[in-house]
Amino acid sequence: MDTITRTIAGSAGVWIAVVCIVGLVSVGLGLYWLFSKQARLRLAELRKKLDDLEPTDPEYGAVRALYTSMLIDAERWDFLPSESGSSDHSESTHDSGGGHIGDGGAGGDHH
Image (cartoon, rainbow, N blue to C red; front, side, top):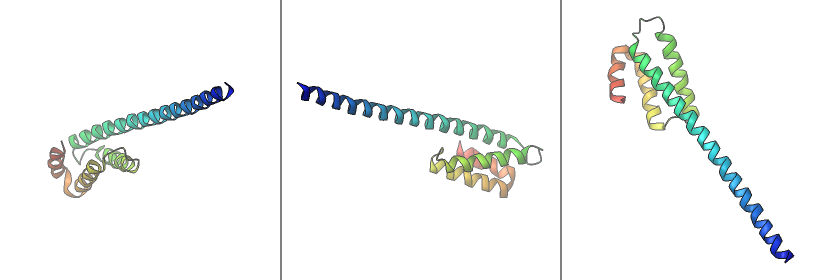
């Protein structure tokens, strides 16, 4: 009977370890998803504000710098899918070279 008790206790210990690992992975993925969602929402908000501003507005440069910085960080941390991150980055580059009017057309294609 002692062997059966050890076998049950050993398999229970393994089962508890597996459940704990799965729980920790689930919490980690949930936190990653939450931060990813917040980053995407904040980037969309900044993009909309950037589209609404004219290049002559005093806060245009600050909003553009913050948007670009957040986009770079989001790409670095993989908060954005690589496909949309690349297109956003190229739009931002296009925005700096082509002016705000050309950017509005690119933004319309993005939505």
